Length: 186
Image (cartoon, rainbow, N blue to C red; front, top):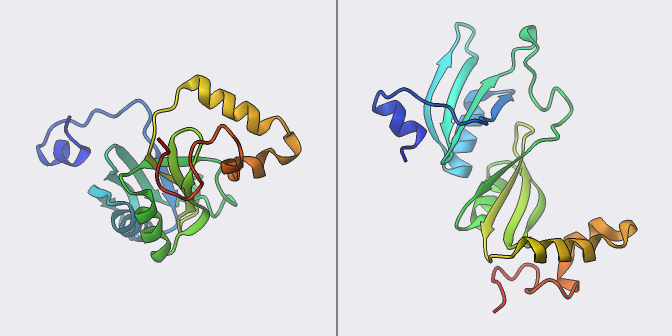
């Protein structure tokens, strides 16, 4: 399968996937620089208006993402203007720790450090300098949906402590590896 950039460079018509994130940011050029440097995205192209704002850009993260500057006159507002976003974008890499570390050095706020989770992912969450939330993960173990549900049920049985329990799942018998080890247990 060709990437968005390969399709664009080959002059082929781009067929949009069914769901295509379209981010609005406060400085699209700076956001493109951040996403290229932190996440290894590739810019396919961007359209700059006479006022210097980017009206549209397409980036390839292994799947397409579009973004633009804020256009409040058209009710297109960025996450910071809106006071945040409830949306989290998930990116999977071979080494989540390295990607989160790189994003932190480039100005991202780490909301949760990378750690091993009961569902077979090692992941952490960042908020980029433009207000968007990203989970960065690495697959470390195949876990059946039944086992994931069993662990989730065990962790959330005490609703008062459910969030803290989820964050510290190594204390539970259903977790098979110590949090932060970077390795799945045998």
